[in-house]
Length: 500
Image (cartoon, rainbow, N blue to C red; front, side):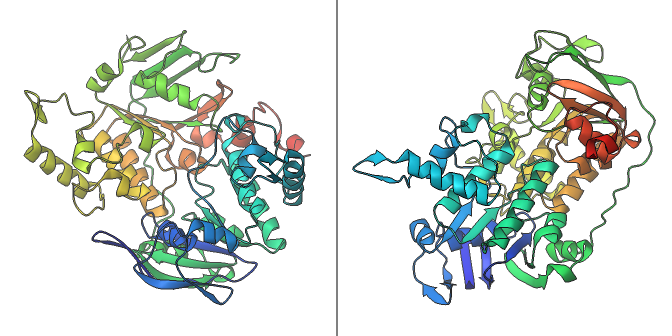
């Protein structure tokens, strides 16, 4: 790719970028959220048309690229948000739009034979007859990759493929990618994660602010150097968590059943000035716990006590009136209206406050002032406060949600996957905000699939498995191996016995 420039209105997403990938390598495209990584690859795949620049494949200039032409040229793209039909099986999703057969009749035997051969060749270990809705996120990722291989892709673009995977699933995916490289495939790996970049890449191209700032071999790179190139300054990898005495119980979850088939109920306390971390593989009751606490879902058993008052029958709006701060696990579905401006999104949750809405009329000047002040304080980078929320990078979207929720000194914060899919700069910023709130006496319930978050932030840790609390300990009494075993439901097993 030579001199690629792509603009969206007054914003330049790619600024005269040169990008070159060699056959049979894993090439990581590294950068902060909003650096222009996905935009550049959408240009390569034909989803966007650049204002300047051109593309060459195997030395041949390509004119106007399109997804259809990209597939014909052997380019496949696995998007960050899966494009699968939940009610269809793995096999049906893989062959959808490219079914073998004639006269309108699909040759399912031929399709199954070909897909099964590919699955075995790359060790995907897929049940081709399983409906997509029953698969884990990691298995859905494999279906997406297999779909591109089925279409004959030799160059495969993966957009943040580990953003929604557990640590174990991420390791399995990296192993699959190494196997694909051995088979001669060329892989472009879009990411912002330093460890996986160094684990899997042959070479690394780093984007910052829409420009290409470095090309280097992974063998010569270090995490510190990559972080500095990504964000333009030195990044401290260790985060300071000052010791703090435990305050009064702010929230108590008592005998709550998270999943219908759970063998036991869940009970735990969150104290003032404490971060209580919930670790676990997604799908083990975290979503249900999130919804019960905010009043979106219900439990038939137990109590939800906020300063000794039971909130189980209290509606969501009343919980918001108690100044609960809520960072949901899916910001695009539960926290933002992507087509609305930042000002309108800032109004969400404040629409009953007389400062913002008086006699049914939005106080637009005051709303603009508050939104802009919040954007400055929390470093939300946008053209202005009228920019749509959906046009922001993921990191800026998350910082915006955080700012709206915690800007009023909340006594309780529910932070669900707060740094999912974010780059190291945004992660460090959000960690610092949560620790500041802890220091100011807020009670924080942190639900995260990232063990790094759990260990760096939490004072106390509980591990969920199939809706049950496997163990609760002080964070310093856990190690990665012990938590990993509990996350897999292996309570009380000795690590060496599991390894054997």
